Length: 150
Length: 447
Image (cartoon, rainbow over the protein chains, first blue to last red):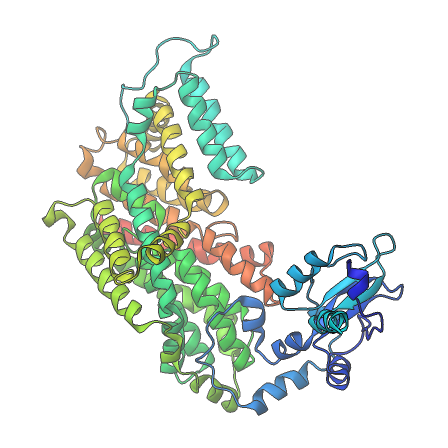
């Protein structure tokens, strides 16, 4: 079994110029934790997900300067929302995470290892064109396994 | 370190050993300056070549390594590695900001003082590494420009580091080579350091400070920070403060106790490792001890080892004695003139090149001047000139000291990059002012 068998080809993808708030709406609408970001040719650029979203509620000094303990900062949910509000127009390309990618012929064991290690979805990319062909989430794996069982 | 033990009389490849050593020494400097090859590799390779080419043998090379400096550095690095986990640095920064009701200029002064005092006892780089992120968080909450804060922190870390034996590597090296104690440094250098710290804040106030303003609601946000939440491990903090207290007491009483600085620092490190690992099983102990050792800056340590060997090799050939004689001829053997040449040249050179190899070279060179100035006692003003010049000179440019580069890295990530030229235009004159103050102080007190 390879990545191709597991991947979900019905993609919800973002453009790098999409705003953070567009991404938030898509995340909530589709109940997806991780959205791939692709350029105009469909090439995979990175992932913007719900964790990137939550990060945007933190002060820049925490985001960019590696301040490990911030328990001393007293903030309300209003403060957090305000900070997110200030950044809602920013393009998602500023906040992409680079997850490890796999190819359609990557063995399924490698895919499982990546999912378990990173607790994220794994983008499946065409080896030649670098276009995003699908995404494998832990849900896709479970669904496939349950079908096999039946 | 000057001695005949390492002297080689025969010619190497038909060349005088003094010139071979001089070329090797100059090459070490040049390659270190280019930063193309890691400085530890350069100094260890040069040290190896010194031995292979027969300028000195291995026994002489090992005698050339100042293990008191090495032990003191490693001991303090281990203590800092454990202490930083307690959150004390963040606590101090927040506490200082709240003490002045989160007024922007007050915070700048307080953060500078915290940085200076901490740098006087602990490593400058660690101090800025841990205080800068909290400072950036505070300036972000206050919506004020972080640049003046970062600028002031560079200066205060280098100024504070000058005040004590353990504050900055040049002082550690000078203390170790001359037998000057922690108390000698504190007694002779700290008075002028207070003046320099205060004087440095004046131009910072006029350039930036008076324009720093924050809205009351933003100041209120900072006032709501709970500094006690910054302490991640209260038990560890108590242990660290106890050991640092004992180590400082050990330095103060070192002469009375007949102890060298490395013994105090290494024993302190071992005691802190014992306390911090008390009650842990063997596996966890190994992990935590290894973590602490991994935090030791081995590049700096091996750079020192190689450098001591290279300088010892050069010293053995008589080259440094020759340079000392030339310098004395230039100053006419006058103590004041010699002190001033050392002060100003070390300040300007330390702004451009790494002050560690410079001080390593200057130590045997100054020692060779002892007969001219009536023995080791007569050299005192020269040691203080070297210390003030080499430590404060580091403020002159962005590459003058390691702490400067660490702060610049933070500034870059904060979207407020500190540009080399822009920094130098402000910093170099302020650094020269600190050297001018040192000059008056030295003349008033010693010359």
